[in-house]
Image 1 (cartoon, rainbow, N blue to C red):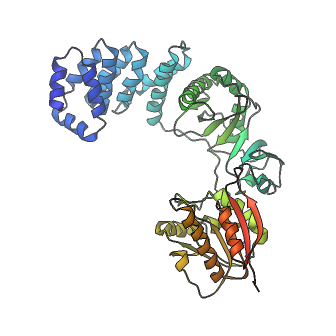
Image 2 (image 1 turned 135 degrees about the vertical axis):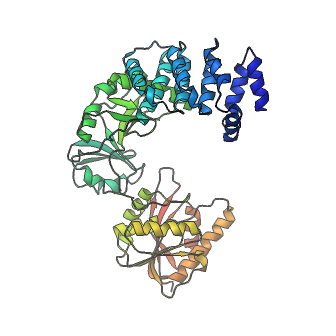
Image 3 (image 1 turned 90 degrees about the vertical axis):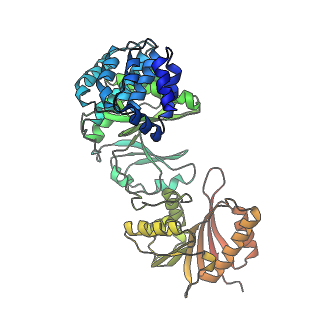
Length: 495
């Protein structure tokens, strides 16, 4: 087939369709090797199209040369890029050149990037100028080492939001000793000069920094100007103790369609770079902060900053996860709520332990004497063992079906995140809960407790009606949609 395509290119006056087909086929590495073998280093068949009158022919020829890794084409590609008058093609030359050795052109590429930074494009040019600048920045940065920013402003005063979800914000709030706190709809707002204290609290999801502006209009130019005039750059200087440039990405949480959101993000990022005189540089990778825009009910945005330069070591032990793993901050909230019902130095077991998160977070708030974890999934058990070793803790992990597990003495506590229904029928899940409570009767001591996180409230309540030797001590709604619950249950003498 490629022989026929080659012959067609030699004779056709309208090569655009043929070039597009070849470009698509070169996504397959086998096809790339076939073309390279046939051409034997002679790429004239494609190089001639860099001079073609049709801009889209030039574009596709350039991209093909890049995919073929035609090093002999580096200079012709660069010269064609310099001569190109159609802005929409220029970034494609750079995409092609980036796949070759282009180090000899770096000084000129840097100069071109500087020129574009100073250029004020017309509205119909902005998209293509932005694409060219993005390509240039990647090419220049790949060949130059860059020192990453390091968070150093631990004693500075900040206002942050610790995101928690819409229930049990007080669990996080009451752990804060230094600073002013306010429980909000989905988190805790804190004004503090002790960031290190917050980094020790396990029950929040993210730490997001507030700016001096709380409302951003959904217009790229206007939003960029407002961010540039806020305390954003000053916040970055205080946090990192440097005047160095900072790389950012935009995270837009909005009701906009995906396409509209993407276009808005591109325009805003481009405008923000210019408004800050490129003290902020947009980057899809290797970024140091995220500028997160949270859409409010009136369509405006609340701007927040997430620092990727600020190490979060709260769950450093959690090297391994599986699809069913509970979020570690949720396990920490469960442990904090259940703490009044826990015994220190207890012998505890998690019958569906996964990678060990529930056990490890329980042990953080109330150290156990002995911990057992059981799971039918072997990969989870291996992950749990490694996670526990990283955490500097000790537990016995057993790869077995809990309902077949036996032990020579009784446990003080069962703590677990109950498996979700998945493909099981309602009847099968009902029977599963029945078997669980029967097994709990067998392995728990008198007055032993079950700390259970579950989304099957009705099945739990049904078993408590049937199994008279268990009683509910406490029940917590764990999410705003009334789906997940934490149950504290005690085994009692049924005489």
